[in-house]
Image (tube, rainbow, N blue to C red):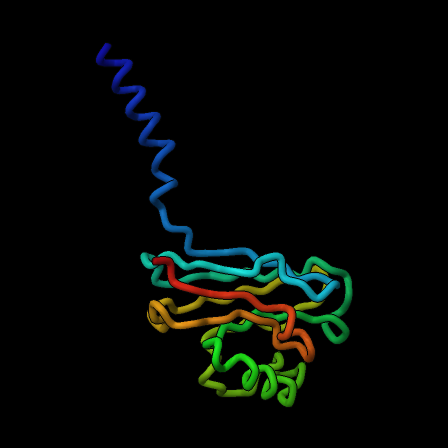
Length: 150
């Protein structure tokens, strides 16, 4: 009886462990239909760094239908996107030195990918954050909420 109990307890512990482990990364895809496959990302409070892996699941080149992943306070999104358009593709549609940008990937085209690590210590619980694509005309539809888990 005691050996069965030990085996059962060990199996239960092995199965349960992933439920408590914080996943400090996410994969997100953009496509040729100007869409992200996620509209919300929640970051576990236990993460010190959170990695976002962006993949362009479409086929179009970055000059025609490029996507990036940009994180900013929700109140700053429109201004960051507008300033990014003026910066141009060679600057990843991000104004150089823009302190409103918390993190961003490079612009990728069909089949390409990039990743960025978000410093979680820069985020505040209860603050509104939005991720979006700053390619011209994309930020209106390619966006989602980004928050620390409660």
